[in-house]
Length: 101
Ligand SMILES: [Zn+2]
Image 1 (cartoon, rainbow, N blue to C red):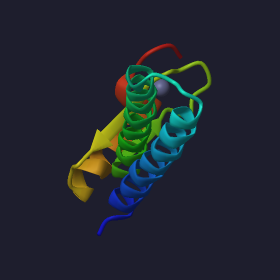
Image 2 (spheres, protein in one colour):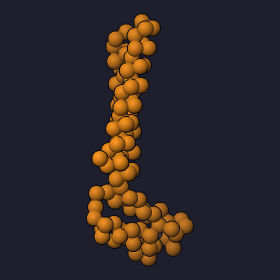
Image 3 (spheres, helix red, strand yellow):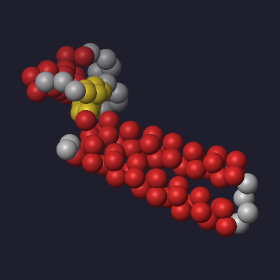
Image 4 (cartoon, rainbow, N blue to C red):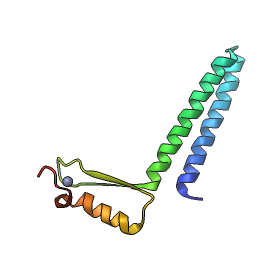
């Protein structure tokens, strides 16, 4: 299993556990079922969103230009090592992407 998948799965699982304990806590305080469901959906969807964003971070590479004041950056995802090299050279060599000097 890929590291990113493990991280995503554990965050998704953690948000499920938080949602379950929050659900029983709310139920013991006589909160209406509709309010409990709403709160649980919010917790779970936030957890899944965070898990997905983190997973993307692990799977992608970000190259930024070292020249001060230049905001050029390239994010690459699911690509070959050769293509990563090409993209890195474009992003880190300011003369290859122009912009303010
Ligand atoms: Zn640049």
